Amino acid sequence: MASAVPRFEEWLSSEQVGRLSSEFGDPEGFARQRAGAYERFRHLEIEPNPLYRGYGYFTNVNLTGIEPGAQGAPVKLPPPLEGSVRIVHDISGTRIELPEDLRNAGVRAIPLSEVWGSGPAEVEAFLRGTEEPADRLSALATALLNRGYRLEIPDHFPQPVRVQELCLLSSPKEALSVRRAIRVGEGAQLLATEEVYSSESPANGQRLYASSTDLDLADYAKTVFLTVHAPDLRAVSVYRRTATTGTESRLGWMWNGLGGYRAKMRNHTRLTGRGSIVEDFQTFYGAKDQSYDSSFDLTHIATDTHGTSITRGVFTDEARGMSRGLVRIEPDARKTVALISEHAMLLSRGARSDTIPILEILCRDVKATHSTSVAPVDPEKVFYLQSRGISTSDAVRMIGEGFLANVYDRAPVAGLREILYPSLQARWDGAAILWKEGEYPALPRLDVTGTDAAPDWRFDSKLR
Image (cartoon, rainbow, N blue to C red; front, side, top):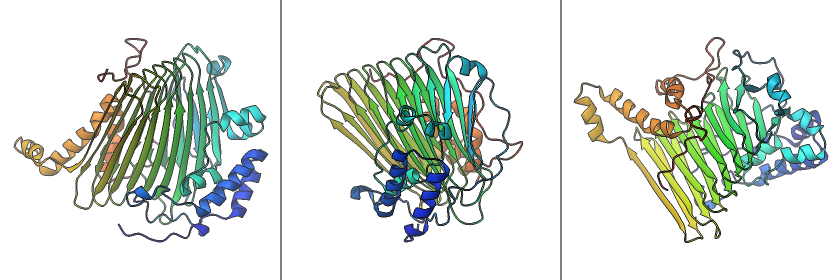
C-alpha cells in the first residue's frame, strides 16, 4: 500500500473553522475549544504513540477541500420504526423524531442548536467526557463539530427505549462530525444504533465522517449501542467512544466495519460502579485497500466488575487491520473478571493485520486472560468442505462468515447474524452498500436477547 505525504494545511483553514463556529452559535467556551482543536490538528501526529506508528496503516488520506458547512436537500428516508426515536444527520442538518408518548413520559432529545442555547448547565452536560484531542484526526473532528444531540432517559423509565440514528453522506467533499451525549437513568434500558451509509460514491476526493459518543449509565441501567459502519469506499472515519458505568449496570458496545476507506476508532470505558458489566464486540471485513485501526481501553475501578472484549477481522486483497486493546485493573478493583480476545483471518497474501492485547493488573484478587492470533484460512477446513462438494471459493467464504458470526451470535441483540448478513454478503461480493430510494439498508426492529424470557439481558458470564 503506497504512502503519500499529506499537506494538512490544505485540508482546512482557520477561516473555515471560524465560520463554522459563527454559523452554529458556539458558546464562548466551546468556540475556544474548537479553535484550540484546529491548532492541535495542525501540529499533532495522526498516531501519537511512536510504538504504533508503523501499524496504523492510515496512509493516502487527503481531505483537501472538505466542506463542513455545506447545505443541501434532506436525504430521503424509509418510514420510521414504530415507537422508536429516530435521529438523522445529513447535509441538511440534524432531524429528531421523538414519539409523543416518550416525550410526555420524560425522554429528552435535544439537537445541537438547542443545546448551545440552553444555558451553561446543558452545555456542560453535553460536553461531559470531552478530552483534549491526543491525535490529529480527533482534533479535526472537534474542530469540525457540526451535528449532535443530547439524549436523556429518566430514572426508572418503565420500558426499553429504541433509538435509531442514521448518518447519511450524500455530497462529495462532505464532512459530518457528530457528537452525542447520552444519559441512561437508574434502572432504565436503551437500545441504540448508529448507522453510517452513503447515497453514492464520489468519483474523486474523500469525505469525512467523525463520531463522538459519551454514555453515562446510572445504577442498574442497561444499554446496548450498536454501530454499523457501511459508508462508501472513499469515506475517512474517526470514532471516539467513552462511557462510565453505575452500580450493577450493563453495557454492550458493538462496532461492525463493512465499508469506508480508512477508519480509526478509540474506545475508553470506565467501570466505576460495583458489579457493572461491559462487553465490547467488534467485527471488520476489509477488502481492496481498506484499513481499520481500532483501540479500546477497559479500566476496572470498582469491585466485582466484568469486562469482555472480542474482536474478529477478515481481510482480503490489500486490506489492513490493526487492533490493540488495554485492560487496566486498578488496585481496588477486587474480584474483577476480564477477557481480551483479538483474532484476524487473512484471505490473500497482500492482506495484513496486527493484534496487540495488553493487560495491566494492579490488583491480585482478579481473573484476567487474553488470546490473539493472525492466520490464513485453515487448509484442513477448506479441504473438508471441498470433500463435501463445495468449491474452494465458497468454502473460504463459509469459513470467513462463520468466523465473524461467532461475534454476532455472542452479541446481546437477537438474530444479529441474520440482520447483518445481507450487508456482509454484498461486501463479500464486491458490491457497495448504498442508500437508495426503495432499497434502504437501515436496520429493522431489534430486540435485546433475553428481554422476552427474563428481565435480565444475556451477558456472557462463563468466566465467573
